[in-house]
Structure formats: C-alpha cells, structure tokens
Image (cartoon, rainbow, N blue to C red; front, side, top):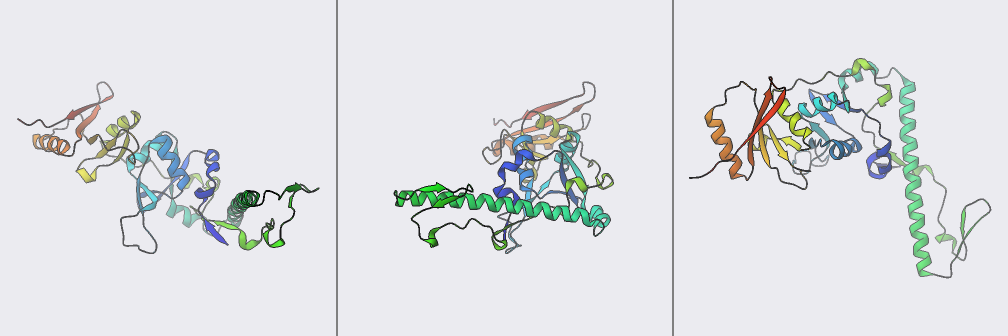
Length: 290
C-alpha cells in the first residue's frame, strides 16, 4: 500500500472544501495541518502563516520547513471574525472523544479508503493513456477497439504489454490524514474562543483589508512585515508597528525605525485606531540624510 497526501493528487477537491476551516490549538499555538486549507487561505484570503514543520530524517535542521503552518493570533482572530475558520482545542477534543464513538472512527476510515481508491483510479487511468499513446506512436498499425462490455481491447499486442485493469489491494494508495477527526463530528463545546490580540491588531486588520500580505516582523524588530503581494513574488514595502492612539511614542523609536526602514529600503509605518472617527490612521516615516 502506497502513501500519499490528500492535497497532492486530489487538486480538484479544493472546490468542494467547505468553510469554515478548523484551526488546531495545541499548547497555545495555532496550527494548520491540511495543505489544501493552507493553499486556499493564502490564495483567497492572503493568510500565509509560518512553516514550522521539519524533516523527519533531520529534525534539527531549520532551512527546509513545511507543514504544519503556525498562524499569528491576529491571523486567527481575523479568520474567526470573518467566519472563515474556527478554533479547535485539540487536547480537549482528544480527551473527550478518544475511544468513545466507533461509528465516527469507522466513517473517517471509510472516507480515507474511498479517497485512496479514487486516487488509485486516477493514476491507473493516466498510466493507461500514456502507454496507449506511446504504443500508437511506435506501432501505428496497432488499433484499439471497444469490447461489448465497454472495456478497451488492444489487438496484436503480446500479453505482457496488455495493461492490467483490475486494482488489487497492494496497488491502493493510502491517504495521509491531516487530522484525527471528521469536521462534522466536532462538538461545539470543543470549539476554542477567539484569541486575545495586541493593540496592534487594529493596524493589522486595516492593512489586511487593503489586500496586503502580512508576515511577522521579528526579523526587522517590528510588529509586521507588509507585502504588496505574495511574499514568494514580492519584497516587503513596509515594516509596521501598531500603537494605541493616545500612546506616547519615544523619539528614539521613531528615529531608529525610520533609519532602519530606509537602510533596508522599506518604509517605517506606524498606525493606530482613532476612537473619535473609529478609523485606523497610518503614517510612513523615512529617514532623509542632510
């Protein structure tokens, strides 16, 4: 039996994914394990997250990271508020549901088996088409005819070259699950609450509504790194810091942030929520030499 991730072959299934998506809360960290969910959130909602999964063979390396994806609390709060996702307390769910409902487990295993069978059929169909195309190019005289039962019969071919159409158990691809439960079987009491966020969340939400991509700004000593498009294609334009509207900002922070932003060819963006107008105002500071 061969293993495969559900997002590798069944790309057409992404259109069938139902919102909202589950976000696993494990040890106060918010994680995504499903590659289809990660891809959809990045493409449709500008939510990138940070890869934290490492290679099983080399667990100490940190150059090639992948699933799971860790989300900032601001990203989780935004997705929950927009009803795009919901939080699942995985530890609580595991304790309450483990070994209790065999019916749910059987449904889950049957869903995995049916997906594996579907993948196997798709792969066998593609292989058969490639073989028939190659044979038709090498031997133009070979013709394919349809039998009375609707199956294809290839004449003038040795039996060793005839494609086996039946699927045996060893040929089945096994689907690697990204969770231990069906979304429909998660009780409401296992849903997590909206995560608490910093005062800079207002700035984050404002920039996200302007269709910016936002990543953590620890690399530049700020709250957020702001990109005009997908970070895989664009450099960031701003390093952003959020403040309360009446918060005092030391001049040293403004000068240091402006010089840092100019040195790395980015704008130093500050902003906050103004209670009087219920809007977020932003300012960009650039250092100008004399």
